[in-house]
Length: 392
Image (cartoon, rainbow, N blue to C red; front, side, top):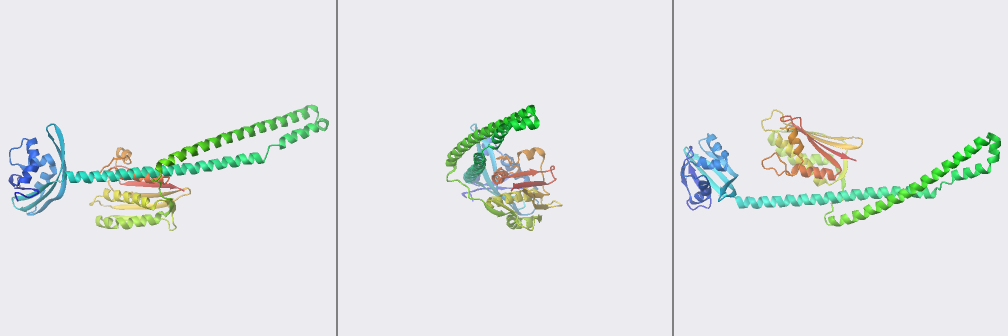
C-alpha cells in the first residue's frame, strides 16, 4: 500500500501512528510543518483539520466497523505567510482492537470545481429570476399605464361630447326675462339671482377647461412613461417570462406532498392538509410555485428533530374576499427574532451546507406573483409558520 494513490494511515486507539504510506505522508506534511510536528500522535494533527475526527474515533466503542465514511473536512493553514485552504476526504474504519485504518484523499480541486459550478448555476438562476421579475414589473406597469390612459381619454371624450352650455343658456334666458323676474320677486332679488347663476356658470366653465388641460398633461405623461417602458423592454428581450396561466394551488400542494412523502414517512413526520374542496386558482408559473412550496416543506422537515415528541406539519389554504392565504406551520426548532430578520437576505443561512439562496429565491418568486411571504416563530423550540399571501 506504500504506493497507493490515496493516503493510508494506521493508528492505534490512543491515536499513535503505527504506519503511514507515501501519499499519506505527502498529504499530512504541510500540517506537520505548520505545527512543527515531530511525534507520532495523529490526534494532534487531526485536531488541526477538525476536532470532530479525534472525538469521533475516541467515542467509537464497537469492536469493529466504519467510524467515518467519505466525509469531507475543510481546513486551512499558513505556509510562507500565505493562507492555504484544503478539503480532505476521510474514511476511517476500526479493523479490530488497536487497529484503526483510515484513507485520506485531497478533494480540494474537485470540490472547488463543484462549488464553482453550483455558484455559476445559482448566479444564472438569480440573473434569470431578475430578468423575469423585471419583465413582469414592466408588463404590470405597462398594463396599469394603458388602463390609466384609457380612463383619461374617456373622461376627455365625455367632456367634449357634453359641452357645458346648460347654465350659460339658463343665464341668457334669465337675462331675457329680467323684467318678468323683477315684477315677480323684485329688482334686488332678480339681480342677485341672475348674478349668482352667471357666477356658477363661469366657475363651471373654468373648472371644465382646467380639467381638460390637466387631462391633456396627464396623457402626455402617460405617453412619456410608455416610451420609457419600451426602452426598458429592450434590456429584457430574450428573458421574458412565459405567460402566466391559471394554476390550482390545491393540486400544487398535493403534488408537493407526493414528492416529499418518502422523506416525511422516514422521519416519522405527520403532514396535515386543509384546503377548500373547490379549486383555488391564481395566475402564475406552476413550476416556480412548486419550487417555493417544496423549499418551505423541506425547511420544515429539516427543522424537526428526529427524537422530537411532536413532529407535525400543517398546511392550510384559505380563500378570503380579496386574497388567498397559504399557511405552512411546523413544530420544529423555530428561531429567535434576530434570526427572523435575516432569513430572507441573500446569502444568509443557518445550515452548515446551505447557500442562503433558498428563501431569497422564494421571496423573489412570490413577489413576482404579486404576493408576499413571511416567516414567523415565537422563539427557539416553538416551531415556525410560513405565511404566503396572493392578491386576486
